[in-house]
Every structure is written in C-alpha cells, then in structure tokens.
Length: 212
Image 1 (tube, rainbow, N blue to C red):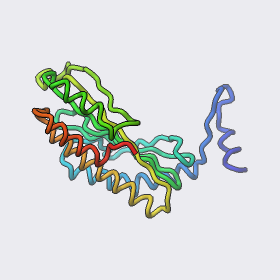
Image 2 (image 1 turned 60 degrees about the vertical axis):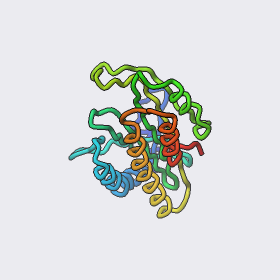
Image 3 (image 1 turned 180 degrees about the horizontal axis):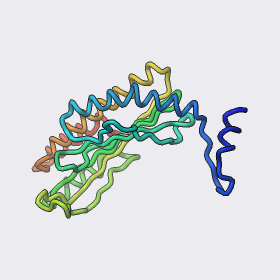
C-alpha cells in the first residue's frame, strides 16, 4: 500500500476537501527544522539580547505550506523589544530542495512624527513590488509610549540548491536579518528628528528588506 492510499483511508469522507501529505516527507523536513535550524536561530536570538518567541520543553510549532517546489514545512519566530512590541517576524519554509525566508519589520513612531518622514519610507523605490504598509493605532495598553504610527516593511528571499548550500544560505540570511532588524530598531527608538535620520534607516533596511 502506497502512502497516498494509506493516508486517504484516514480521511473523513464527509469532508468536501482533503489535503494529503507524505508523512515521510513531513518527518524529514521537521527533523531538519528542529535539529538544524531552530537551535541556531534560537542561539542567534539569545545573543541579540531581546525577548523572542521561545519554546522551552515543548514541541516546536511547525505547519505545512506550499513552497516553490512542493510541500514545505514552516517555522515562525518573533523578536520583540522589552515592552513586548514586535520588532521582527520571521517565517522559514523548507522543502526538500528549496527554502523561502519571509520577514516583516515593525516600526513604531510617535504621533509627533513629521508626516514627510512617513511618506519618504512608504515611497522608497527599493521597496517597490512589496510596498510597506502604514497603520494608525495608538497604544491602548501603554499610552505613555506614545506610539501612534506603525509601518510594516516586508520582504522575502528563497533559493533552490544542494542541501549544504541551501541550509548555509538560509541560516546566513536569517542571522543577517536578525542583526539588521536590531540595528533598524535601535536607530529609531527615539523616533526621527531629521530627514537624514530617515535616510540612515532606509539604508539599513536595504540590507535585508529591498525588493528582489
């Protein structure tokens, strides 16, 4: 009996739609994520010195996603500041012969921010094709933080290659993104005072969030 037939026998026939996954592939990819990727990602996050989504003594949450070349398994992590506000959300999807790393950077700015600074970031040519989004959302939990504007900058990168090159490229990409995101966050803790501050921030963002 092949895996398709075996998995199909487990399905509730009353459902209108089913998705079958090769359990051997799922186990293989989960092992790669939990043994090769997660320890190094966790080590990098620990070295960063900021709070992050951590799994202590429990099962690492991994879900299935359709990747560039078929079934992929996805591991998500969050990096936050000391007030539990998000800095970076990383999503790594690994298939048998490819990876995709998607990242989202969250920039919080006070209500007093010059609107021209916001427009400059939103209009940056390097983000064309994956434009940043702007949300106006005052902090109800901690109004003293004076966070009023939220800009999310997002990007993604992937590769298809041999396993050694694949994993080294993915881990290098993740480590660089974490380090760059911290630089971006720390450069904006006090907001922007001049357009020069904004340009410095954008130059940092080019490292990992430029549209490919």
